[in-house]
Image (tube, rainbow, N blue to C red; front, side, top):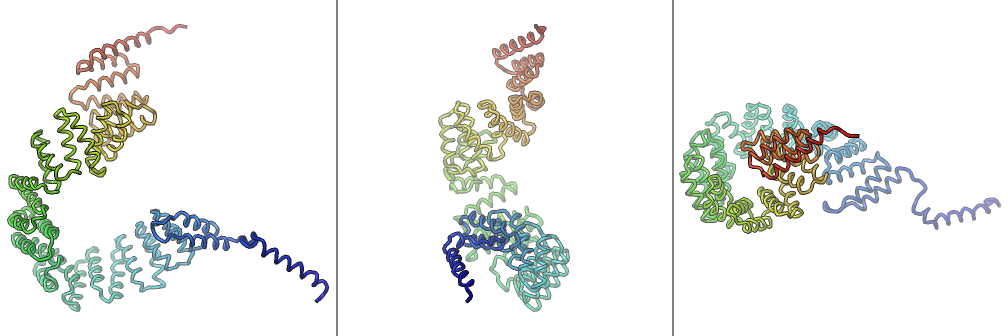
Length: 585
């Protein structure tokens, strides 16, 4: 060992020890290349990966994002970001990242397949087709990819290509009947019914009695009007499973198409007595008979003969009796229909229709006695239904029972779901009542609830409330939008046009307001003093004093307050005089 080397060695050893002892040197390597930064951030992201769908995704996504910023060519971070964005409900952005990952990975199957599924879900069929085709070059017999490609072709209505893929799927699935039926369906969508029949008949020779393909063949024969062969196919289906839902529907459809309505009704009654069948299945068969019949009226005439017997078989299912009443109504037998509906009401069945039938009828006839009877019956059976609460509240106010009216509304707004379609109307009544009583702050949230659905009176009343009771710039802007929504839904409603005009006037747009207040007056059959009052105020703002005085005269003639009219006319006269006076220096 040379003397020089003996001097250098201790220095090298000391430097190595200092490097090992330095925390900075141990934790942060000097090499900050993109690859190392990416590796560090991605490793940290994997440590934060959520274990389930309900976990917090933000830390995980943040580290993935940093990894991607460090090296945007790494497919792993790109694909993971795509999957996270998909979970966050951003499918288009997710697809963009998956596509970048797929390209960066040079066509990785594990990225390409979910990318294709996402593209299909996003209805980006061209991208799905492109990616699947590329993947199939490597794995041409991938069954799942072929199904996805067929789905893309079907969505684009490329029937010839979809059929070619379907043939390959059938071949790979070893003649799976589901795939054979699917291929037959493609032929039908392509308008090639003869090829669909040929395919299914050939399959039937090697797989006699197979139910799914035989069912498709049955409906093909039926649609072609070939009842002989349809009957033979149906016979084959009966041999396979006579009591299945598929066979029952086929039987009813066949009888309906042959216009054998009485046989169809008897068959449904017979099947209703079968063990294991439920009322919903029975009602479905009845509706199939109606839908498939050339004459639904004739089918109903036969069904009403047997429906009472069917209803007796299921005494705990009032829906069947309700169906019978609807049939009678459609056949014009109102007496029979109302008799059934009345018995359903007497039984307090938990179905809305029987009660609503009578409440609507007696409300239209302004028969408050019967209306109250059926509204109370509906409320008793279905206490959370808003429609009966609404009727009872209106009956109370109609009778002058203000206390009962408010009690009904308060109770209804407590128990009726906000999703109930009558909740906004109940909220509007409460809002108007509170506003009329001067409790403006309490009224506002009810107005907000009332406009949660497209309800023109709610839009109108809330707009007027905001204009008159608030008048702040923000509320006037909101009022204008609400009033515009009301007239958009009912453009010829004089009241709504008046509100919109008044909002515009309060916002300083008197010229535009004048257009709408004139439309409001034209749309109102009976002269309304409020409309003429608003017209007069708007004309005054436009310095059209003579026309304003004329408007006040119309206001008086249509029932306006004489004292108010006199004061307004006097004030306008003074304004007119001052304007006419010569200006002084």
